[in-house]
Length: 165
Image 1: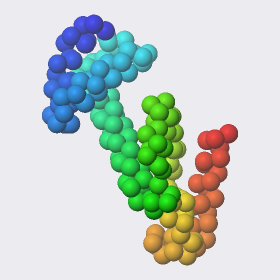
Image 2: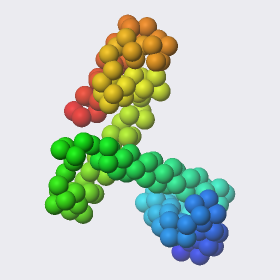
Image 3: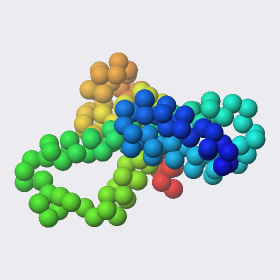
Image 4: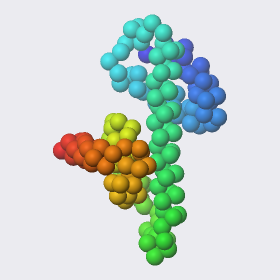
């Protein structure tokens, strides 16, 4: 593993720096890539194309990073959009680091749960849950029938319930 790290870490970090435009994020993700490889059952000698494998693992971590930042930004935008009477007081605005970590983990789990749904099912579910749209409006927006909306939402709820069980 040490040889794999020494041979490929500078290359991987450079690749990630070009992709992310940020030295710190590149260093973190290069490190996380090697941690992920070490945790896997693979031996470095099993890798025919180590750079290709490392790049693939790193791409997944980059996608996770962007997805996490998108969720965080959406949450911040949600907080800004709250009417003042619903907005948290200054004392409530800064949750503890533990609460932040738990909320972030919960958001990532919800995101993974929803990404497992087919696109139209996920869209129908989000329109119903987040925008509280009636079935007829969801059907119109997605170009599907009222019955299909009902089937999609049933499927999504079943998926969520099974995941929580």
